[in-house]
Length: 390
Image 1 (spheres, rainbow, N blue to C red):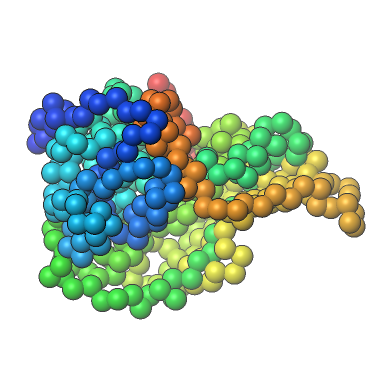
Image 2: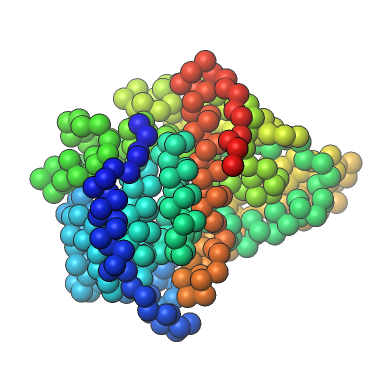
């Protein structure tokens, strides 16, 4: 499924442009925020925004009535709560929007928000298909708006320090990066039942193929191709973005992937995955499963002089040919969720109009790597990829 903006979308976007706010923000001004997609991730974004600077929720949109109401209550009842996100974008008193809807909505909503003159915090993966990358890039770079992609490691202090070590050559030549992420969905599989009377299912589907309401698809949409891309666009996207940043290369030339539905047979996407991607001069491997959470997620950059093991708690560097108490040689801990710093960076950029830490090109490249791996899985298991010119 490839989203191409239709005539109605362009007419809506064009009409909204005239309504865009043109106020110049000072360092101490309160941002006026619109919320699009009010699920669990949005709750985390708003928690982090609470720690990032003064802001007000002006309007919230979600296809589920109770989720809209939950966010409206955070505004002390002051926010409007439409079911149609265009009503959020049409409000002149909104400076920026947070978009945390399911993946299949990301580009459509972002393009419309940009056309309406709103700055955007866009959750990852920023695209649902490869074709959407060009659509999003053109929309962002032809606008004057700020877009922060939800790749929060780019603002996380210890990730930035780890990447600097790699750039400085402290590991020697890095030729292999291992990435992994294990989570246990069995613990959350018995979620609170969804009352379809509170949900506008047709609106939630939006550009996805029409289909009957399905509770698991609504709650765990990341694992169905119509709405998400499984582990490779949900989890791997974060790690491959760090790899692209550290290794200064962002397009794989060959991808291999195998996976299976050993536990969650109802899902489209595999719950157990091994993948490998070859970049010019180095390889990246990924493994994970969704019914075991021991070791969580992380990366290992293996160089000729040292290995750097990195996760959201911190990093450790182990030098080659050093034994005993002399190893590890460097350890650094992370002390808070990097989404707070990432949101702070977004707030600052909305006011300064500077480029944010996670620009649209980084978000598109990270999503592309996951899409390519999924293409390999859905095909013969291996795919060669030629970088697009231009």
